[in-house]
Amino acid sequence: MKPQSSIEYLVGFVTGFFFGFGLNFIFYLYNLLSKCLGWSRLDIAWWMLIPLPLICGLVMAKTIADLHLEDY
Image (cartoon, rainbow, N blue to C red; front, side, top):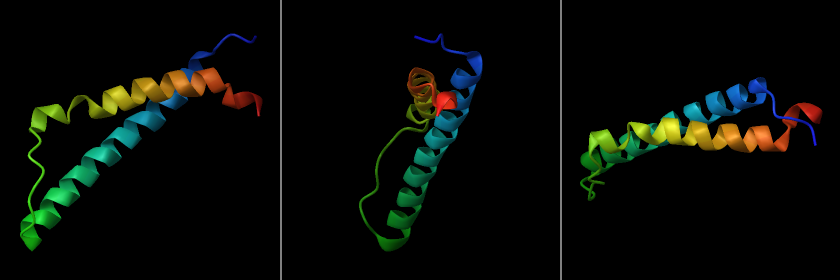
């Protein structure tokens, strides 16, 4: 089995980091839309969304490195 390279971890982390920011943006848009339309809002504290891009980035980094995507 080929050892995992640091570029695979970096690509996975950057991909997951932006995916986590996308999730934060979806929560923000839902709360904005629910405020305008009078729906019930998601009561998520702002500090709970801070580690979301970091966690997604770390999980995606490990996943991409395990897949060895540069081999395909």
